[in-house]
Image (cartoon, rainbow, N blue to C red; front, side):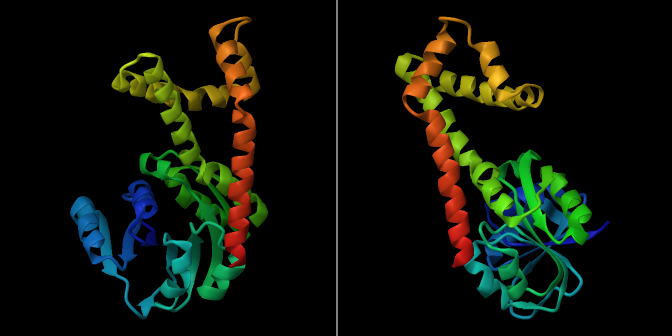
Length: 256
């Protein structure tokens, strides 16, 4: 079984850990000893844990870096040696910045999302082509992995698949609120929205969004009335602007 070192103990590290446990010999390294203890209690002998201290040896390791972008320099200073490969989930942090901070034979940017916890992440990657196959295999452990051709593309993808769960959570909450506003019990509205989202992935795999919309929207019907209200209130334009704003923020982070 190949070895994988996950650096970090936050939500994303935990989500990824759920997918790779049992498929890789996983070592989790972090500064928070309490979180490491909790992870060890949960996963037992399936993982090993180590508190991140100065001179942590990454020589020849495949390192999956799951820390906040602002922590890159502080964490990098504690590394010693040259990794075989560095896979980073740091939004907006460029390949150049990563290579400057951490010595590694191969460097790859990745952008998973929290659905990794359920093996459903839509993860995008770009970086050193010579590690493409291995990087895609790792990220496929916790969902679908898509290799992109440039850093601009992964910054755009970050604005969709990386930040997307927050956008869809807003839509889900708003639809449930709409149901409650019209008289549904909150718990019933929530169940309805959960069921709606559960089936959407399969529908989108087999249908273009425009065709799916047309199939549901009959002339003069309820869907047509609701859809007109969405257009009137700028939902489409809001989504387009959300992706633009998130992309621009990712680019700005990379320039800091």
